[in-house]
Image 1 (cartoon, one colour):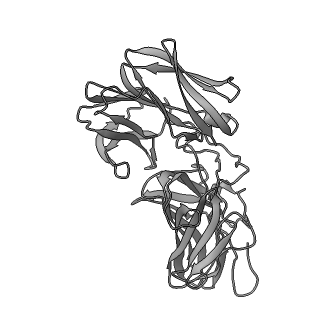
Image 2 (image 1 turned 135 degrees about the vertical axis):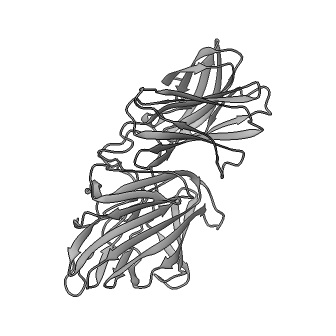
Image 3 (image 1 turned 45 degrees about the vertical axis):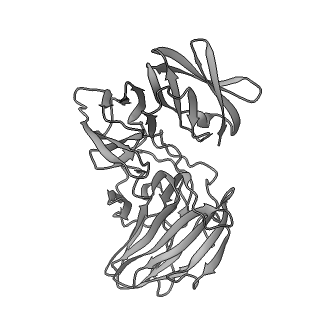
Amino acid sequence: MKANGTQTSIKKDILVVVLTTFLTCISLAAFTQPDYNFSTKTLLTGTDRQLGAIYRYTNVKPGHDAILEITDITPGVTVTEMDGTSGYPEAIQPTLRNTANTKGHLEMTITFVLAGTFTPSNQLEVPVTCIDVDGQTGTGGSINEYDEIYLNGGGFMDYDMLAGELLVVESGGWFIGNNIGNIDYPGRDTSATQVMFSTVNANLSTLIIRVGVDNKTTTTSSRLRSVYFKRFRYPNSFLSTPCLTAFTGVQKQGKVELQWNLAKCNPLTTVVVEKTNNPNVFTTAATIWVNTEENKTSYNYTDNNAAGKTYYRLKMISANGIVTYSNVLVFNTTDKTGTAFKVYPTTVNDNATIAVNATAASQAQLQVFDMNGRVVMQRPIALQQGANTITVNGFSQLPSGNYVAGILNAGQLQTQKIMVQ
């Protein structure tokens, strides 16, 4: 949105969204309710809108607050508003003023904490959507907005791959979107999906957000920004057809055998099997090249060196360099009996992982019951002999509430209580 007087434009930028499932089908419409609420804040220390200022946003989720610290302001950039009135009340919406021929940003470090404390609290998933990362031509050059998101060095990114107005890359754990279209979209809204991108990662408490402007003109520019924790969908999405259709594994005789299936038409070139005994630091166990010419869809990898409690995930790399991650599978080679039946996490959005031990290969049924004992969801599960770990999706189709999940195998039903958000 352009402004009168010496300021050449007033613009809004990025919107930070929470994407729940790592590999889901994504289309155009936005979900109607935000996943987080950043509408109430208090300045704890420092000077408002200055470097070092620390704010507390209360009740961003039940039982959780968020601590926001301004950790960097580029010289030539002034934060004239920390929360603008236009746009979305649940969003963090700073306004930046960039002097002529200045490229710079506001950097915000956000840590989720237990309500009323400073104790960090990991979130199941944290997504960030950058909205209205647009631009325009001006006196002597152009104004191009950019946004950078750091989600603990992992996660994935999604956007409209055919729009052509954003240059979107991943570099050093940062997800970066630069406007190259030079087209101005007025207002703070989510209608211009061609200048939006979303990122998401799981199991983290701290993230870093940079909202920036590259002002190549000879006049001052003022832009409205919006950081919104909310879920969106895109046309021509990288995830419009899930690349990964299944990822399972079985532990037996001290080995872990992983299997995964890919869609026939997928943009992947490489799948990296990653493992760790520390879920915060994964290392490469194997690199698998994806041969799309042979239409191969089924892949496997056997880890002969699994020791103790070991975590596995797939790092999937597309031809244009976009990186996505699978769900995480967990095995414990010191457990000789295997897990009888377990669902995790117990609070489910769409995907859940089930662990079940089988004395022989068999066809089982996963069943989900409501609190009246009615079967509301049922899926066939192929079990191998040993300790199986399998991901199941589709829980988001159920209304939020408490349920009982069960595995029916060889006439025996084992159950566990879960909650669907």
